Length: 72
Image (cartoon, rainbow, N blue to C red; front, side, top):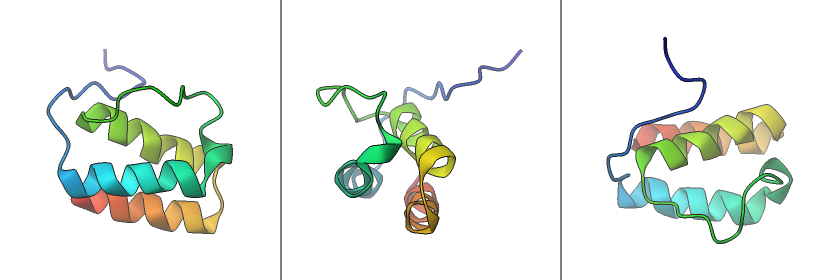
């Protein structure tokens, strides 16, 4: 059985982390669930950012999610 949430604990590429941090600032409505102090350094954490942008974001959020995903 696979997890409903990303589980890849490998370090995320620096470009993906930087874009994910930018997304947290640009689209706060997508991250109501996330603590501001939560770590953001693993692939799974970045994948969760992408997932939430697709669930709760507008077209701009979707486009940025795609760009982040291309960095992974």
